[in-house]
Length: 68
Image (cartoon, rainbow, N blue to C red; front, side, top):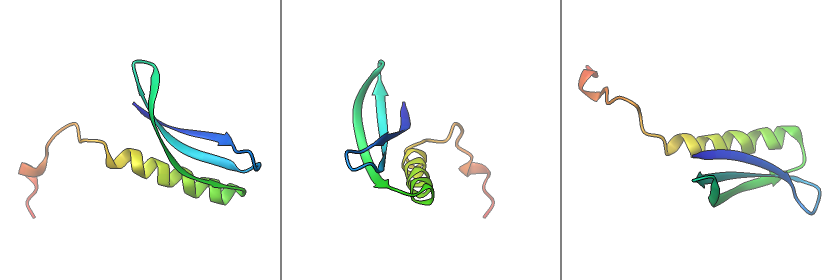
C-alpha cells in the first residue's frame, strides 16, 4: 500500500514523500521534494499522487472493447 506523507524538514520547509507499507511497516520511501509555500506543497502532492497512480494496475482489462 502506498500513501503520501508530509513532514517538516530541519530547515522549516514541508517535505513530501511517497511511502510504501507492507504488513504495517514502511518498507520504502521516495522523497518527492520540499517546499515553503502552499502552492509548492500542492504541486509536490500532485506529483506524489502521479507516482502512486503510475504504479496502479486497472481492475479490469478493457482493451478488447477498445474500437480505435
